[in-house]
Image 1 (cartoon, helix red, strand yellow):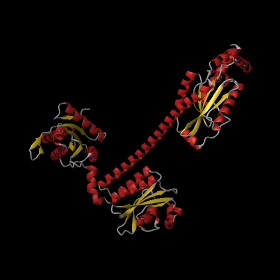
Image 2 (tube, helix red, strand yellow; image 1 turned 180 degrees about the horizontal axis):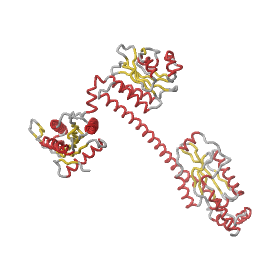
Image 3 (cartoon, rainbow, N blue to C red; image 1 turned 90 degrees about the vertical axis):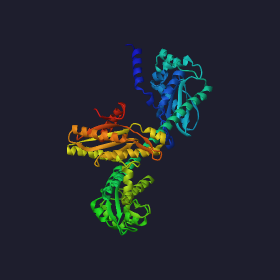
Image 4 (tube, rainbow, N blue to C red; image 1 turned 120 degrees about the vertical axis):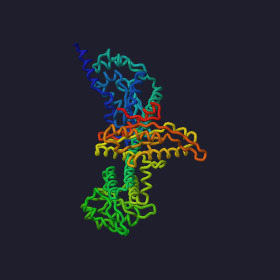
Length: 567
């Protein structure tokens, strides 16, 4: 290998080692950007500019780089051969490039809108600031071009000076474009305009993505809150004891907010003292100490809140006068802050308090205040359930039109049937009943009449099955029937289920009264999907899907018939 070939190989290795995106264009001129510039730059994904800059290089032969105020390359095109293979590799010419970078960066730091520098390597560079939302966030550099026709003698002499291959160096110089100086401002304006628009679009997308993420997080939190509310409402409607309801509520709240320890205290019949309701995460000695605490100003956060009927926020128990009588017990329990909210009914009467404890001094945010108020309202529902338990039960578990169990209660009954079948080693069955020709009722006579027909259908189905069985309205004109413990064997279960299904189909097919005065009547048929289950059943949801599939198979076979689910 000759000397020239070895030089080219060495030069090629150096080029591969040099990553232009990591090149330091401004090592000595870095200045920490202000907070506004730094925050704004963090909001922008500049990577889309790389492709734009590369296309511009291919079209115009001019290299481009967007450099942050901290000297970091935010985006750049590839580099011209004169730069990569010669100027940035040779130490002498590299220093001259560096002088250009420093001079241009200095001009940008001084607030100039445009700067040009004729490098001692014989090429020209220029720069302009990139401004987004009236904030200077970066500098746009373009470089390695001529303003006039180059002097070959200058570059021949430079090749000799730097020890470069004259032929290769001049070939690389010949690739450098010529740009008229009067066109530079327009060229920079075009590039900065494109960069600005892409940056602003990226910034908008980033902010939009963060907004979406924040909204999704809030939705997730709200969903969890609603699930908690539904759980507590469900327990209230079932008549679960207050202690169990409050214990479960507190535990669920603490799962949602691990930094909190919660307590519910109930006002006694005299209205003078607070009784322990639930506080599973607080030490027993603390719960025993506050059980029976007097209501009044200075009786901790909860005693004061119960007396005033207003929230009491104590961010530092050790320093607050309301807690002076309870400091020793609070310190033993490692409690540092207590926020208490009164539990009041619709008439404004205090029923108890909902307390939030923290291990460190702190104040609630506005969002946390709203949550505490929401939890207090939930506790009030539990306390007042005796006044409205039946109404809540109807809303939670029964269809308003037919009075039949709704989906929620159906799922509970189905779960019970599955467990009982397993325990009794017996078979149960489920029917998915769908009316075949109900739609004409709504179309011809209106939804009010349709509702009346659905009510009649529900009554007829309910009168066919046993009291222990479950008839539920699944939605629209769909009904679910669960036959509990219908047989000790699969054959017996199948036989008895088909008998009941036939009776249901027959009673539905009987003439329905549409308009009593006009003696209008309607005949409905139904398609019934059947599925049996015992102890090996996997889930209620699977059973419902299987029964639904069997019902559609019955419809596909011509309607007005029943069909067993086939695996």
